[in-house]
Image 1 (cartoon, rainbow, N blue to C red):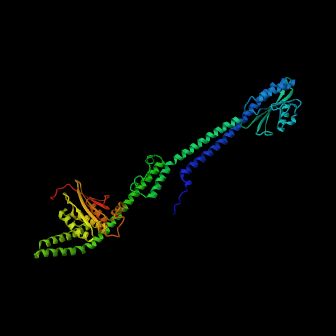
Image 2: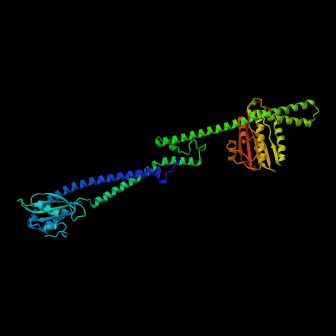
Image 3: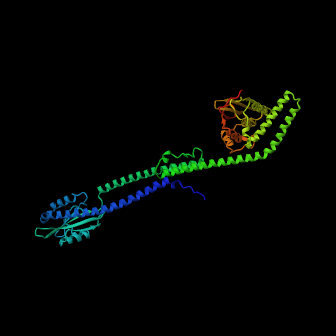
Length: 490
């Protein structure tokens, strides 16, 4: 089943902040709607109270001026009342008993002497109701006005109770300029708070983004030995005690388990290779041991007949030690005669040099031998086999006319032997792959291979290393551990 990658804008690091922004905007819209509904009810209640109080006060204050037909005093009272409250519309009209405008707060709109028919129909109905004693009366109208207004009417009565006029007051139901400015400021604060919430949401998803980046690096670079432990997951994520921390710890545990599984797989593959080598060795062991036994018996018979000069005797000794080395190597591979290994002697190193010099001469190689036997005891068979194998590899890598050098260095804890060549270079990555058995050289002859050499060294607690050392192209160092036991003489 194919995995479809999420679009950049569809990732959680964007979806969560956008979702929080949407929730904040929806919540803000609900709050604004509720606020406006409550505000409208509050404004209407305030408008009814103020309008009723205003017309009641004016109906008492305008009795004498209306009786005297004192237009100027009536206008002054009306003008003062219309400008007393900043929330009022500022429109007050006084109608006399002849249905004429006696005074208005906006005289240009309603001049003195205008008939009541010039007023909107809602206003006219309120005037008629007030004249018959139904006062105060209120009505909501939008006639000739930009916003709804509450109109209140009250009759002006003389001391005898006779209706001598009607006072009308209009009170706006909408928000005033000051209220609108206040509301805009509050909405601005809500917007700032929304942006802060979005920023907080971005910060909240940052740990998830860090964990995702770590997963992307593992996917791109693979699971290395370093990544198997933490995989570059920030420690702050692992220390969290919430769901993100649980996810990070589970992710690291999963990677560690995968690393262990891969290590187990490598060990299984290595065991399979060893089993394959063992099968091959077991098949060839009988075919090798029989002719070697015959050759050794032939050497013994030749010595029994006598008549051998000193030079021939040395030659026979070299041949015998070589044959016994082959027999011991086969036994070591089969794991049959480890207890029979003898300690490394100077003759073993001389034999190894004698075997390598003709091979180097045929290849046109200059061989520089500076290997000195260590004072401590080492098993001869694996040491000779490893040095022979590495030397053959170095001679092949050096090419015709190249140089190969072997030198040793002894410390209190190890005997180090370096094998260097001046020809074909071997990189550290290729060396690790060959030693680990992940790569095989098929274009050149490599003896038993670096993998088997590394196994032989590891069996005695040693190590095979790649060393960068000028002017050599490749230097391989073999570290043999020295056990502090009885020292052998030089």
